[in-house]
Image (tube, rainbow, N blue to C red):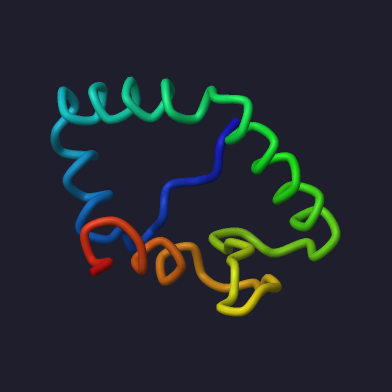
Length: 86
């Protein structure tokens, strides 16, 4: 069981919720990327940190500039990547 959908979704989440065909393609492409050994090792390390810090619902453990991690809202953490990044 994955995380609960955000009660206040951002622009990308709203798009994929209302476009099921685009969502299927997005999931297919991400599955291929996230199945690599490097990504799996990366996620294992993050889960160790997550278990130690115990963040609440709708929260991410995010990386800070210069190293280290912190707990912040899932939405603000993920908004820094993707299309908004320059």
